[in-house]
Figure 1 (spheres, rainbow, N blue to C red):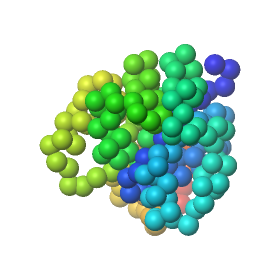
Figure 2: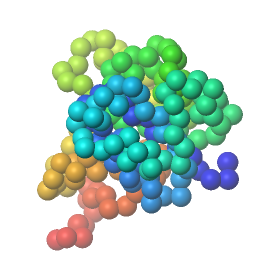
Figure 3: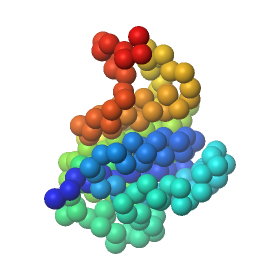
Length: 192
C-alpha cells in the first residue's frame, strides 16, 4: 500500500454530520478515502442537512455504490487502515454483528473484521435495548470498537459543530490519525 487508505461508511442513523465531518477532517491528511453511503443515509442526509450528494462525494477519493459487492473494499487483499462507520445505525450494527453482508457497507465491515483491521462504529441510538447491547458486545468480541458520539464537555464546546468535531477527531485517533485542532484532556488550551 503506497498511500494509506481508510474506508468511511455512512449509514442511516440520525447524525449524518458525523460522516461529513470525518470526510472533511480526512481531506487534510495524506489518506486515500473510500466512501460508501447506505440508502438510509441518503434519506437522513436529505432530512437533516442542506448538503447535496455531490457535496459529500467530492470529499472522497473514491465513492462506491452500496450495491457493488465486487468493489475493491469488499476484498481483504485491498489493504486499508480500517473502516469508520459514522453514524452507524442499529440495522448496520446488527448486520455487522451477525455477519450479514447484503450491501457493500456491511460487506466491507465484515472484511475489516476478518482481516483483523480497525473497525470503529459510531453507533447512534437511545435508549438501547438488549438486542442493541448484545450486537455491540458481539462486534466488540470480534475486535471492533463501539464508539458512541458522546460529547465531551471538558473541551467547553461553543457549538454543535465543536461537539461533532471532537467526537469524530477522537474516533479518528483510534486509527492513529491526528487530525489536529483537538482539545485533549490535560493539555493546555491555546485560547486560554
